[in-house]
Amino acid sequence: MIHTFNRVVMVRRYSNLCERVGETLIAVISLMSILFMVLIVLFILKEGLAVLFNPAVKSEASLRELFLKTVWQPISEPPKYSLLPLIVGTLKINFVSLLIALPLGMLSALFVSEKASDKLREFIKPTIELLAGIPSVVIGFFCLTKVASWLAHAYQYTWLQEMFTPTRLNALVGGIGISIAVVPITFTLCEEAIHNVPESYRIASMALGATRWQTALHVVIPTAAPGLLAATLLSFGRAWGETMIALMATGNAPILDWNIFHSVRTLSATVAAEIPETVVGSSHYHVLFFIGSILLIVSFVVNWLSQLAISSLQRKFAGE
Picture 1 (cartoon, rainbow, N blue to C red):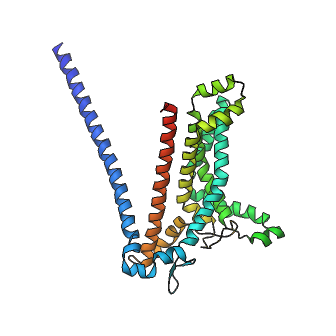
Picture 2 (cartoon, rainbow, N blue to C red):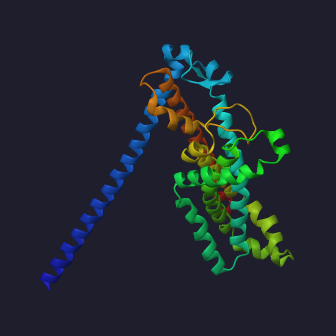
Picture 3 (tube, rainbow, N blue to C red):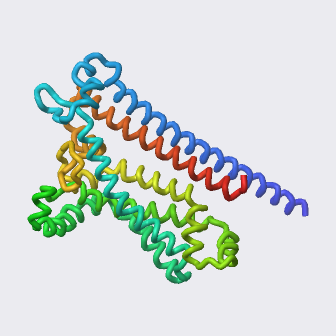
């Protein structure tokens, strides 16, 4: 009896020890992740903010040069570092990708949550979410070889050529590619927001005589609006930082116009394409890190706003 009791005590002590070790490891790994993130942010900001505080860099890449000029030619003499073509190119691609991804993702989520049978839901949801696992380089290569060729046939119309003067690789091709990467995120977040609407709301609406789709449009969607807004913001953040698709499928020409049929270059693609060839400590080097700082800050702001939207939705469901 005493022997059995001692064994139980030893097992409990061993279990407690293992539990404490596991908790310590999890805490250390979590703190290391936060530390690495902080160090990465500090490094990028340190190199990027030289544009604002380093006199040698400011003489070539002042804020006036960055945001009021219109030409990006860092290897010209003198070098030109205007970010406007890159910002406009990024916004053009984001606009095209969200114009495609948001309706597809939201309507698919609405159908799966409100209309599809259980078996159909179990098929559609994993299938769409599997798109998130496709590597960006594969999507970029698909757009480069197939989507661009398919759209090139549409460019044969004379009126289209005269009105838009399309190029083979442009913001439209890149936007289609990025939309493929964005749709799974949009769908998953929207489906979760719609699914979290209390079932009592639907029952009450239909008890008053509303149809299933009237309930979805006039009750479910307004109730889930903060979650849908969060999905929109996070989809924008995903499109904003996409690099490989933008690098492969857009033509990489820093042209300042709003024509989606012209080649563009995005902020992230510029960093990826040019950072390996820059001289460390040069103005070009610091400007590229300044671009990275802009990408980082915008991503943080978008994620912060999306968290506010999600918190608002949670408070709404809690009745606060």
